[in-house]
Image 1 (cartoon, rainbow over the protein chains, first blue to last red):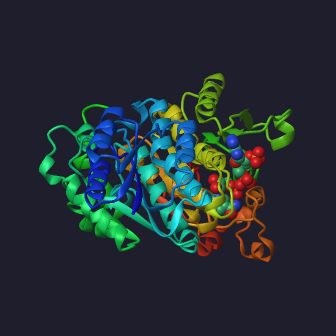
Image 2 (cartoon, rainbow over the protein chains, first blue to last red; image 1 turned 30 degrees about the horizontal axis):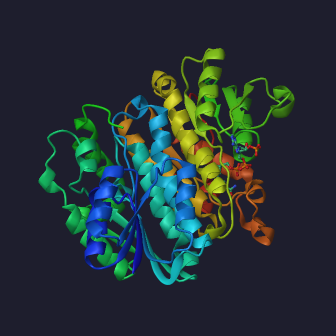
Length: 253
Length: 241
Ligand SMILES: NC(=O)c1ccc[n+]([C@@H]2O[C@H](COP(=O)([O-])OP(=O)(O)OC[C@H]3O[C@@H](n4cnc5c(N)ncnc54)[C@H](OP(=O)(O)O)[C@@H]3O)[C@@H](O)[C@H]2O)c1
């Protein structure tokens, strides 16, 4: 099987890439972290093609699309993402532009481009990594929440038209994962053991993709968050404010 | 007499924004209207001395936010009572045919610009303990023929859901989702609506419904047919917007 993973060098993307490689698949690993990509290439002895790309930069995305022009993928995981946490009005505008470019524009451009370039094999799966914030809101990260809701609804929108061309779409809503990303953007002192290990999350995502599942809510508290988010969205946003926003003591972007 | 308020409306050269600007101005409020066009004569265009127009093309979000902030200084607005971020654009077709430029353009105008404008006017909104109303769309639930447009409107929804809690007691943040409305938007997006257009809500009714939802300080409001009809009988009481 041929797979493409964005944000493949670290965190959840890395865990998924490792598991795909271990299972004997070929992976096109996209990231901007050169050192981590090198390590991946060496470790995999050729079954991992690394692509250096900065998804915040449209011309870099275009180059990446040209690089993979002749490949037929069975699995594409649009996973790369960053965040910005703190008081909305205090974070620089440029940080928001970058956040939206990486989390929303890049995956949309890639998804439609891969379809247009006929990059997807006839029984393939495209996976969008959204966030559990889709169910509950995220005070202290309102623009991050915006990008993840946008991604979730894009996935839902393209599901039928992509399916007609043989491409299944999976939207994933992961709860907190124990990665550097989470450490960086969470309030200090929040408990790491409340977050799922990236390896465990990766297993669930790959399984959901293999089964062609439409949606996956995964991680600690994901089920409850989905349930109460639908039932009492205002209560959930208030709770999110208490557990996250009120405890953030600095802006991180 | 109603108290005169400061109201900012983006995308006010056509459709809902244009009618909203005129409706608020006719009740004596001061309106700053924005758009992408160069207008030679504001008074001729809007027909009201209460409406001042500034050009803020949201396809360049940072520049648009800056233009609005500068206009606020120029007009010496120390506060904004109500901001309606309404400007938007759409593209319709198979999602595989959407080019990077079309995707980027819609995200810039419909999502990045409102985010940066909200940030730019935050101090003025806080000064008035004001109200920020985002115009979304029922497409925010997902739309195969408008995939990126739907994503940008869902983005606004996620933004509002989070910011409303964050800005509690500082500024009321809400989202209003119109359904299909009889403006020129569909034609601009390349969609032929034909006979179904008959079933769309009239622009007039949608404008009344939006004003009512703003008065009610809803958190999230979908402009259903029933809400549209019943809004005809709703009007501002003294001291209300
Ligand atoms: N009509 C519907 O069925 C419908 C349904 C759901 C939601 N909505 C939402 O309602 C809002 C108003 O739409 P509408 O139906 O009134 O559409 P409209 O008649 O096309 O009005 C949109 C306004 O936004 C302006 N605009 C477009 N691009 C811009 C840019 N780059 N910078 C600044 N302003 C720009 C337009 O300017 P120009 O005059 O130069 O075009 C116009 O003034 C939008 O947010 C739309 O998404 C509409």
